[in-house]
Amino acid sequence: MRVSGERVPFAGLSTADRNIHRTSPISRSRSSRPLKASSLSTSDFVRRHILDLAPYKPILPLDVLSDQLGIPVEKLVKLDANENPYGPPPEVFDALSKMEFPQIYPDPESRRLRAKLSTESGVPPENILVGCGADELIDLILRVVLEPGDCIINTPPTFGMYAFDCSINDGQIIDVPRGAAPDFKIDVPAIKAAVHEHKPKVLFLTSPNNPDGSVIHPSDIDALLELPVLVVLDEAYIEFCETHQSRMQDVLAHENLIVLRTFSKRAALAGIRVGYGAMPLWLMNYMWRVKQPYNVSTVAELAACAALGNQEYLKHVKDLLINERERLFTELQRVEFLTPYPSQSNFILTKCVS
Image (cartoon, rainbow, N blue to C red):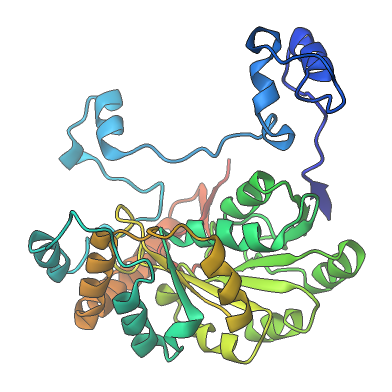
């Protein structure tokens, strides 16, 4: 178990900046001296926990890669972000070409999309929130529940946005590492111990997990739902899982369960940014209060609705990806210096051995 999020005051600042920060009129609430712009350091305007925050390192877009490598975009094969290479259903392009009223702000409640998601999932629309990607919902959840210094439990190796958003919200990260390859199994006893010791607000679980594609057994999830912690189950890759089903409907039976999903992988809408989450009504009440009113664009809602309208295409692409995953896994096993790990996602984690 590892605790991170502890910060060294003024780390990364020059000695001059540190001295200015200690004596700044802004940082000394009892100062009677008049404020002058010339007496301030730029760091005086930044929240202290942001001063040492490491920026998230996103992937490079195709056009930038093309310029850097001198290779035409159409010849690049991009594998670093688990994107869907087949693209969205043709109905998406048709819907976007016929978009009306782009000058009007979008529906702040994404009613049409939430209704379609409700029909697909069996979860009432009142329990569904749409975001600008599931990443936005992760941040909103932490904005709602974290006070400065509150803890979350993370299970690395896993998706980096949980720790990143926790740090942005001035929280602390309790790392409970997963087991060794090839299973990458979560350590349920260690998680239980961490919950009782640190009293975290949130436990993040990813199934199938990024970056290894392993799946959390339903009994482990059930055991963790008994703990006094908000369980966020990220199912970004669940459509590619052949062994387990989504737990979205379980939010109706558990007051401490949130399930996150995305259109980025199964519907190939990563560039348009549409994610959604199912959560209990008590939390929905506060999520509506903190989200930006027009967080999901008209383009995003149109594209997502159009994609849902062609379930046959979505299933066909899913099957193609699963079949290719199994074919590639077999081929990788034949390479003597590679050790691929079984995956229930649209990617394969592979160890390079000497």
